[in-house]
Image 1 (cartoon, rainbow, N blue to C red):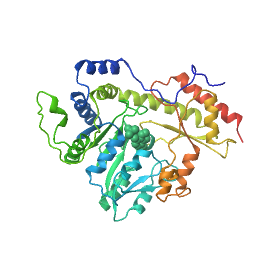
Image 2 (image 1 turned 180 degrees about the horizontal axis):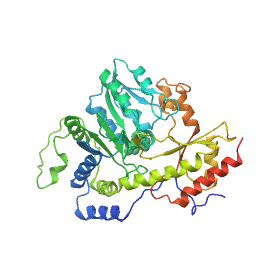
Image 3 (image 1 turned 90 degrees about the vertical axis):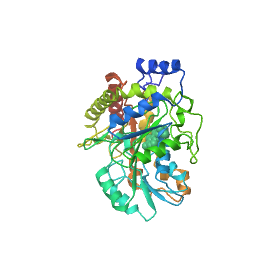
Length: 388
Ligand SMILES: Cc1ncc(COP(=O)(O)O)c(C=O)c1O
């Protein structure tokens, strides 16, 4: 069947209900549009939800990662270890400081960075590691934290995919020194664009908050309120990285249904896995035994030993059946920028093997059982048609 606009099943669609719409209208009617009481409420509720002491809202996860590194005083020439299997943001924030992103491979048979390779990559210039909780499946944090503590390396978690994820019953958001979440349009909780960092450290939180609004001393946003003052002092070079009350209102409404949305995603993942596991054509994602997966992504892997067509062709076949998909990620070391930094193809074989075979299937709370079955039937059909 050819793709038509009417029956196209999108890769993602955000779940926006009346609660989000009326929350935004309320903010519009209040007359206070930018950072204000709704942002503070969102930070408080978010911190409570993940069990963290402090939460600081940002305009994106990229901004949160940037200021997490600023708050630990990353300097030019320092090194930060991160997985090659990640999005542009995780590496670019290191480059903002003229520091070096030191890429490491995936663990064999996984999408996560290999703690063993992390240990090997540490030098006397290493200041931080940014583990990425790929797809919402938490990294091996016990191992990572132990290695980091032993070498005095800070742990800044990229949890763009990991709300709500739990590692051994503990929420992602309280494990490392700072954890950064994304509320981009496709994420498990969205504010359109937005981000949040959580930390147990009051000084780091205060520094990130101050830098997020021009480096102005305490409560810059209050200068137009009844309790505020026009006087302010710029303490250091800051950024315009604040979240708005309009966005926070959406975030609060989304947070209230975060558990329900995760349960729906988990149910879809289970349905996919049950239906696709019996096929040799694909490998289904692993499910952590002692963790909660946020299921931001459901990444299926095409099995070249059983299928005559490659991943790209499977994506085309799905598209012809009106099913949208995506790929997460083209490893950083395969991009021009990173090759200019000295990285080369073939350097991280596990990540390349994973990338070559990966397809992200639609997974979001608004996906119906019929939609899920359509994806499953299409994949069965493709596997029959192109079996070796
Ligand atoms: C692993 C990872 N880190 C960071 C980000 C950046 O998030 P944001 O778009 O909120 O800046 C993304 C976004 O897709 C991501 O996938």
